[in-house]
Structure formats: structure tokens, C-alpha cells
Image 1: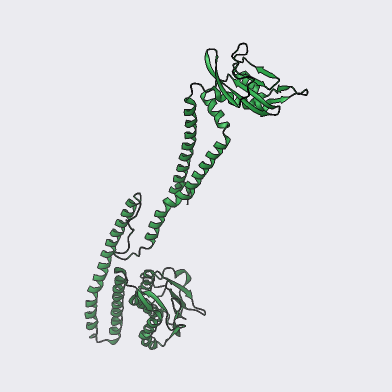
Image 2 (image 1 turned 135 degrees about the vertical axis):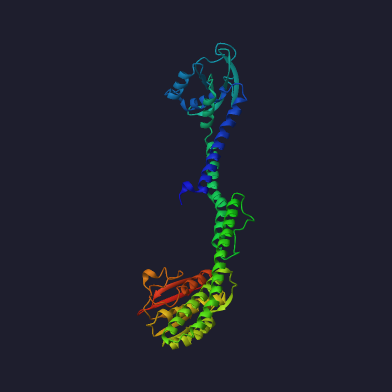
Length: 448
């Protein structure tokens, strides 16, 4: 199956993509909305700067408080001229930048023992936000104050995202769970009704008025396809019924004139000519009778019931035994079990077995004997030791009017076609193998 043409694959990819976009978009929009609720969001940048300062605070060899220069602090000072910070402990205060209130009495929180504070100040007539946080650093407990970072909305968003790793991991897990659910659940939701319809289509037996795809419970997306398929079956049924009616009517119409012709031929004085003509008429009559059987088998559904294959085959052998004896052919019946029961149409199975035996009598003229064998759970073999059937023709001899390469004029090539049709109606199979030592073995296998 090509994934690019799979409905479930495309639906899964679409749902997973949309879910990812919605979750990421919702996260960003939420952050932006929260930040937009403040008139100024410079506290985000100040809080980020505090974390940068925390990593840089240490003590020198004399134990004095110091801020180790690093690239992040240098970048903040370079990109934001208004950036400032104050780092202090009980003995030392370190300042950088234009600290608000350092030359007045407006020092907001310095020297106080606080955990967290946020304050506003003016820088170039613009109101900004600073923060003061008491942090445990490599130099011990230190009060860190920072501010003067008027970040853009995008910068604030990126900082919030980078500072919320666990939240992003949670979002990632939720996204993966959503994608996994789409991958595991969506194919089943979409493919289940399609597979159910396919299973129903496989069960359609092809007989007139047979099964159709169920419309009840079918998803709305499949209803047009189910309706079109059922209407197509109805059209096929109508065309097949017309052909069967023509075949049946033609066969019926031919039987009466053939019977009259047979009676008139009895008056032909030349015995040789009379025998030849009578044989031809009998051949035509047999063909007409076979056509009638074929039309009846394909024209109506079979009524299935338990059928004993042992009793059926024993009766079929008894029926053709006189013909076999007339042709100096022994016919033997074998069964390992006294009863072998399958579900089927007894008349149809009887016709199939009879056709196989008559086919052996007609074409396997060199065979000294014919064996009809029944084995459990539902298998019938008709074995002859005649000239056999060539491997290359075994696939076609079950078709109508195919005689398997025999040049004799007996038969119309319909007997094996009837056998194949009967087995198809029963859900079984017909196989042709070579008999050990030469000949043909036909095996009818019925479903358990």
C-alpha cells in the first residue's frame, strides 16, 4: 500500500500537524496575552538578568564579593544601555550602570532582607520595572537587584519559553501523546468501516437476489459508495438473469425438436447411417440437458442442509456402474468413515460428482478402473488411470466448452464447468493432480 494514497495516513498526518500547530500557537498566544496585560514587561528581562547574575557571583581570594565578567552580562550591557544591577551582602555592595536612586534617597529595596520584590522607576521618562531577589549563590546569600531591560514582545516570549523548560517538556509530552493517539486510533476509526464493507463484499455469492452491502450503520462518507456498489450488483443481476433466461428458454425449445428428430431417425433404413445420426442427436440432447443444469445452478440460490458425502457418492457410483461395466471399466467406491457430513445442496453436489465420474468414463478410455473416494472432513476424489490432463491445460479445463485437448466428439465441455460452479457456490475448491502411474485425480474440497 502506498502511504501517499492511504486515507488513514493522510488523515493521521493532518490531525497530528494541526494538533501540533494548535498547541504551539495556543502556548505562544497565552504567553503574549499574559504579557500584554502589563503596561510594561521589562520585569521578565530583569528576572532573566538576575539569573544571569546569580551564575556570575563569587568571592575573590580575599573573600570579597565579586561579579565575574562573562559574555551574557557583556551582551546585556552592550545591547541595553539602560541596564543596571546591584549585588550586595551584609558588607559589600557592587553596582553597575545607572542605578535608580543611587544619588538620592530613592534606593528602593537595597540592604533589606527580602525574598522577592518588584518596583518601578523612570528611565528617560519611560517607566520600567526592576526586581530584587535574595538568592543563594557561590558567595552565600546575596541580594540581587536588576532592571533597565525594555525588551520587545518577541524577546520576552523567548525568555519565558527558555525559562520554563518543565512546562515545555509537559507540552511536548502532551503533543507526543496526541500524535500517538492519532497514529494508533485514527487508522482504526477510518479503516474499520472500510474493512467491514470489504468483508461484506467478499461474502457476496453472486446469485440473483443475493447479499448486498449493508446500508444500516454505514458511515455517511461510505453511503454513496455502498449505494453505487449495490446498484451495480442489481444491474449485473439483471443482465445475468436475461442471459440465463435466454439459455434456459433456448434449451427447452431445443429438446422437443431433438426428441422428434430422434424418433424420425429410427426410420432410416441404413443401420450405419442411422446409428451415426442417432449418436449425434444424443450428443446434442446431452448438451442441451447440461445447459439446462448450468442455467438452473446459476439461476437460483442453493438451499444448504447437512449432506452425507458417503451416501451421496455411493448412490452416484451405483447409478453409473452399468455404463462403466458396458465399457469394461471397473468402478470402485471407498470411504474411511461411515458418515462424512458437510453443509451444501445435495442435488448440486450429486450433479458435480456424477459429472466427474462421467467425465472419467468418457475421456479416460484407457483406464482399467475408476476410484471414487470420500475422506473426512469433506473431500471427494475421483481417480482414473487414463491418459491424464496436461499440466498446462489444468487451469482452463474447468471453463465452459473446454475439452482438455481430447479430440473425441463426446461431451460438450460443460461437465467440468458445472463441477467448478458447484464448488464455487459451496465455497470449496476443485484441484486436478496426476494419478501416480498416470491418469488424473480430481479432488473436491468442501469448507469445514
